Image 1: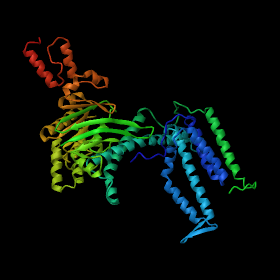
Image 2 (image 1 turned 180 degrees about the horizontal axis):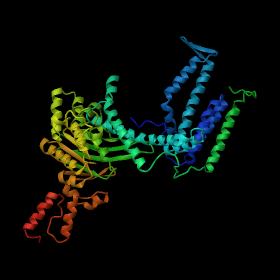
Image 3 (image 1 turned 180 degrees about the vertical axis):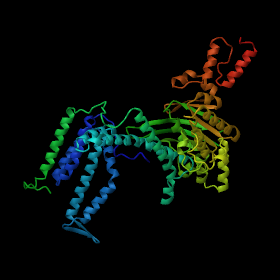
Image 4 (image 1 turned 120 degrees about the vertical axis):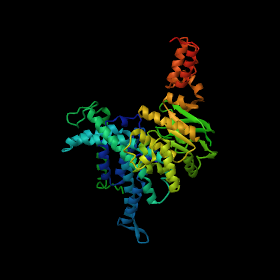
Length: 273
Length: 288
């Protein structure tokens, strides 16, 4: 039951995207998210889609995995689409009871859905191609550049690293405790909501006790190795940019320029919508 | 009472890059009260195997029969299977959750919807079986007692279901020598006096040699030996190849024989070695 979570799951493979510096991928994803909201006509989306397709192709990740993350937010997409179809004012195409369907509503809904799907796929490419550890490394470097964040960058990154590190451990532990209670005849599947809520107590109590113990031991082990935060701390592997990163930054700039330019196609009297 | 595994295979994370075949075509048949040990190197599939025996894991292919009922088919059969086949996990004390020891051990019988008197009877019986005084311990918190005692509470929690087969996954891991001895004694008593089939997953050859009547040796998800201890331990080289070894006594006897003493080098228990050396001494084969 815990094996269906894909958001943030690393897919090990050999590809130029996997080899990029995590900072490059973070910056690219950040820019990509913002730029997606700049796109306001088919040309803009087509350009973004082109770059996304190129990214997926280069990353060597099976399409099945790429689309798994979309499944997780399908309900959010559906709600957005429904709201957009019925709420946007415009030329009324037809009515279902008190609900009006407008042409602008349909177009808006379609754009929204595409935008959301592309957002999720674009960001999950980052987490699929970057191991959690190098991702937090990249974040630490990026956070240091933000004024006022420098002092906390290391602590935040360390917290994230530890949290990420223990997610699989906790899931394994929860799975094991659940099985142990099942072996004693516990039933987690049938019964009403109240009974179900009550049935998680035998899982949660041991899980919490275990986590507190583990946190305590980890803190002790870190202190025993003289850990005292980020101040003056050096790293074993400094992040360095490679040739591929330069190319990636150029591609990012080109994509941004093209999508922003696409907004002005209308002004040039080229009908796109 | 019978337990049968037919052509059982299990693949973790099928169809992902993390795919891993943990069990490959396992066939086991248990049809009488026996003391069975499962040994194997870390990652050989022992824990995965025992979880198939009460339906906690379902085989990717193959079938599991308990009393001639195929438990891979529906949930009710699996639920009944868990009453018949008790499983004590590794570090079982991590599953304790109730406020008192009584309540924790009663969790299983309660799930079986037994009457309060029956539950009380079973809890006190299970506690005595693992060597915990009922009156003294029943109202204490399971988190205030020693690690060894916690583990015994956890074992009692499974025993209170009155299983026909009890599986213990490394029940002595991480305990001090005294704690180990107490748990092993309880388990052996259980087998001797209550007619329960015991399946012991273990790394410790001495433990296994002392108690088991049948040993299943696993390697990379398959069974490579399933025989009586004497036969298994006579193939010490084969065991060493897969990162295990025969009990120390067995090496000692071989060494003695090599140095010209007239002893049986098939002996692998402390007790047997003691007898054999005494016999030899009486025959005048040893000059002290």
